[in-house]
Every structure is written in C-alpha cells, then in structure tokens.
Image (cartoon, rainbow, N blue to C red):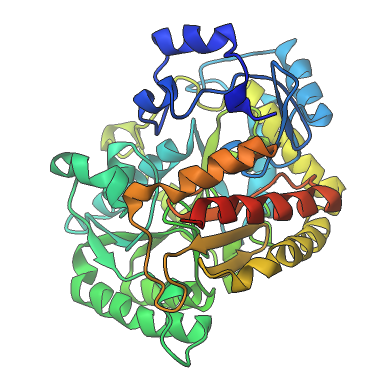
Length: 455
C-alpha cells in the first residue's frame, strides 16, 4: 500500500509541531510529501508503523554499509556501553580510539600515519582546511592561505566546507559569509567531447587545473577533491588518471592535496579507498559516513608525519593545533567503527561487492536506451541514472518540474527508498543487498522513471 494512502501516524503531527528536518522545505511535509515514521530496520529494509517495508537503496544518506541493526556492530556498541560511554579526549585516551587509529592508519594509503578524530563529515573538512593553513603558517609560508576546488564539488555545509564546495543550491545564499576560493573545471566524464573517453576528458580538464596551480602556487595551501565521484553534485564520475596528475602537480608545486572520501571511502568505489585506484596517497584524507557502519556519528582526518611534526614543539612556541569537539573520539562511535573495520578484515567484502556491482549494472542496463535517460554511469557500488528532457541533446528538465521528487514518490509506493539528487536517480545500497533485491531495485527504478517522465 502506498504510504500516502494510509492514515498518518500520531508521530507525524508531533514531529511537525517541533522538529525542523535537514535539507527540506518543511511546507512540503504538510501535504505534498508526508513524513514516514520508521519503527525499525533490518538488513536493507526499513519498516514503518504500518508494517510497510522500504528497500533502503541509498544506505540512509550513504552511511549504512552492512545493513540496519547489524548484529556484530550493535553488539560491539552494546558491550562498550557497559564500560565507558564518553570521556574528554584532551589529556585522556581509551582503547577503542587507539585501536581505531591503529587500524585506520594500517589500511589507509601509505604514509598516512596520524589520525585526528571529529564528529561528522563537515567537521572533518574543517579540520583538514585548518590543518593545511596552520601547517604553512607554522612553516613560515604565511601567503599560502587559499584553497582550490572543482566545479560541481560538495564538501559539507559548515562555512569552511561550503566555501570549498561549488553546488549553488547549498552555497549561493551564504556567499557573503564564505572565504574566497579558486575553482578549476571538474574532470567529470559527462562533459567528454566527441571521440573522448573518460581518461581523455580527465587529462584535458587537468590542463586548466595545472595552469591555475602554477599561477597561484605561492598562495595556495591545498587542493580539495572528492576522488572519482562528485556525489552531491549529481553523482558525476571521473577517471582516476586525474588524481595521479593532481598528485604529481601538487608535489612539484608544494601544495597539499586533501581527499574528501567521506562518501566514497570504505569500499563504495570498488577499492577500500577511492585514491587507491590512482595509486596515490593524499596529504589529508577525510573519512566519515560508512566509518561506523551507519550506527553513530564519527569522522577522522588522516595525515602523515610531516604534517604532525609541523605542530610538534614546546608549548611556548604556540604551534599546537587547537581544534576540538566535545565528543571527539567518542568510545561508542569508535567501538562501532572498529566493528565495521573488523567486517572488512574478516570477510571478503570487496570481492562480494564486485559481484553486486555487476548485478547492479545488469539491473540498470535496460534504462540505457530510455528516451529520458541521458546516461547510466557506475563506479563500484555507486550507480547513477541521469534523467533528461531530450536524450539526443541532453537538455535538462526544468528544475521546477521536480522529476526527482516524482521518482521518490513512485518508488516509495513500490517499497523502495530512492532520493534522487535533482534529476539524477542513484543507487548506493548497503553491501548486504541480495541479487533478488537488486533485481527488485531495477524494476522499481524503471517504473518510477517512467512515471516521472511521462507527460
């Protein structure tokens, strides 16, 4: 039964009386887009109070890796809850945080030996930006205070993270509050020219980045990128050769490289970290979302000994990195993250994901020829279907038509949670999704797109 055809649960009225939801026009929830109260989750499924189930095809905003109510992660959190729930992380430490830092630095790209904890993805970006700027200040290079980003990028919604992003929907209204950044064209393969493949497009687009870095090298602290997939920018994807070229250029010009793997880390792109596909290590690696398997908020910024050494000195020198959050290194969140990483260590997760990714491609194959699909693209366990008004010209629908919202509603009526980014429908399911569930996802998505694009 469609969730829009049921009597609203009492929780909805209570919610609308007091709660302000994220990334939402609250007026929509009064009639056009009723809230759905969720009672429980299990595996890929979310269940409401009427026993209607929804296949969580977006991992609840990309955080859930191994299914809702995963017993291994849940047991680890429950056990930690009986020991220590929270302790100040300045001047104190605890076993879950130490174990997590050891494991993260073990599995991360080579050279990332230090781990700084924060609370969420945006906070990790703020840490990385401040750390890069402060590094150059401690090194006596005070002119190096600017950051370079890519068009169509997204790095979070706190002010520093917004400043280095480039999605107008989130950024424009706050422009007067944001620091000025330099912007280079994205290597997004959607923009490839006739006869180009994704690698050719990436190389061509890098020429503009190289020119920008060479022109402003003495004032640039760091370049920040989302490796391989610009998620909130419409799941746009690019070839790893761009990262290789960027790493080489940053090394030559003495510029930090910040890799925002908040959404793409922990197996989403086919390797544990997306940077691995380019054979590079960034100077600062930002992680969150899947880090705890979707159980609790936590983020980490990994860096190397050179960065750490720039802040290591006598107290009187005033070089320490003074950034803190009350819940830094929270033991419960660290316990969840340790259990999540243990699943990667003990089970063939990436190998299983390869098969799931293949099945996802098969399930979406029929949409390749849909008259209102401009492209079906995929990187590992991320698959995107871009709806367009005209397939031949790739002309977009009018944003006011809200075709993505129509897909969302139609899919919910069929028991699947899809939340398109604009007119881009995407799949980013938990890794425990089965072949049968992938097939269901394919059928429902095709039906929902048909509903949304028929005029």
